Amino acid sequence: MTHYIRNARSTDAGKLAAILTEAMDTPPWKPNLHTGAQDVAHCGNMIDKGWVRVAEGEDGRIMGFIARNGEEIESLFVAAPERGHGVGVALLNDAKSACKRLELWTFQLNTGAQKFYEREGFTEINRTDGATNQERLPDVRYAWEAEK
Image (cartoon, rainbow, N blue to C red; front, side, top):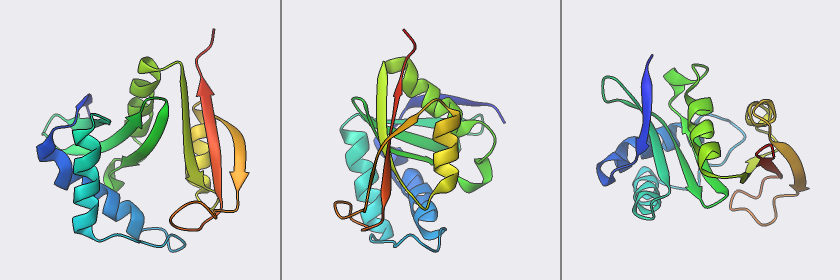
């Protein structure tokens, strides 16, 4: 499926929230701490800050999104039917083209995300017991730097 990357618009908030909510509901180990309405508000807030880029299909469907605050990737989510088709890689490459360094957190239990980020050139720089995140789940800090 062909897609292109663009800046998110305020009208995308509900579509992004649906992707986020689905991703939060799927893993049995991940507590879902927010309602769908809170997810919409959160996505709208990130869009308002200018952090969000989306992958949009030729049919106008939002396939995934990335939220980046400077060098910090706050969120990267791909709609379930689009996973494994290069959408996440395209969003990550878009962020890499804008920064020489990127950092992010993912949960230790999210081994799929860890494999993805490592395959895309990220290296682990820290692990915590999760005491400082909302979910209270052990997490992993990753960083990527452009080749010099």
